[in-house]
Length: 382
Ligand SMILES: Cc1ncc(COP(=O)(O)O)c(C=O)c1O
Image (cartoon, rainbow, N blue to C red; front, side, top):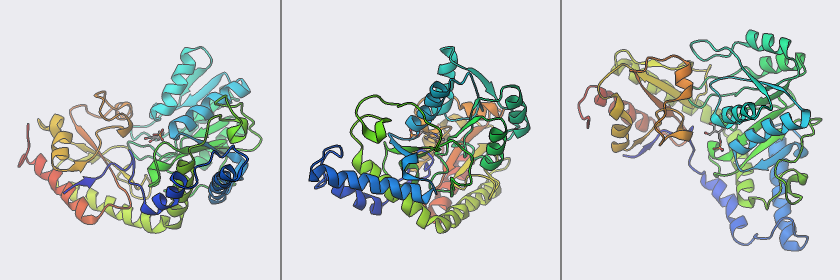
């Protein structure tokens, strides 16, 4: 049996999305910048996609910029706002995705900004009182705090953080890659200046995403070249990706309640099975708190054992795909910067299960039972 439980890394393409993309790979091949009929047909598909995404998020089409994914959108929000507004100070947390952390650390190294880190408690929750205090001493800063953590599933109260940013005239960017398509974002209510999306996290294609920029925030172009994306990002558009992204978001919103109920049920089932099968199992961050954490992510902490090092390998042999830390850097052998921040006992093994709409209860049972039997050393390869 093959079981894919690494949906926070990426998700399977929805066949409905593929269907929407196919014409752009075949007969609609024009360059959207061309003024002839071939170009115009593709241009109108792109603009329809932009309009649909904007409509779903309660924003205007002019506020949506297509990118190559979450990383580019995060980089752009950070770099362009610092450059455009001459910001000298940024605030973030130590458990952000590297798309944010490495960008800010690079700018700090160049001497462009000073960087402060907001305090976190042992569950990785952001101390909003500390954010307030940091901003009180340096008001016009860039604040970059993620909405849903890809490793431990913690959720930030975007409205509360937005109120604090507004109070101090700060620019607020939130990495919403893990929540886009899984939670509803209403940009008339949120006070974020920038949010982002990556299609492959909600059953869309890889290599395409978007950046939302609040009106009134007039940032400089981020890729110099042609006049694409209203002069902001030069380069011929990823036309099938953009159409697939819009379709995937449309489906995600259409089916969100049913998918959330299904996936949350799977997560609860996994928690219950592991708790009854493995003595001393705990869960990192807030990930086991149903309703309080990303319903797609469960970060499991297993008691110290001599099988720890071989756990992911053995799960993989059994056909179960999970992640040990951040999936974006899985394959590398460095420990997770997120789990390190939570001061977790380094002798415990950590497994991140992340669930998607195509997972079934039978798959959860198989994965849980396999992990339990490995733990009981019934079938371990050491
Ligand atoms: C929270 C978060 N931000 C950013 C990214 C990067 O997105 P992309 O792979 O589309 O560049 C990821 C990918 O795992 C993520 O989980």
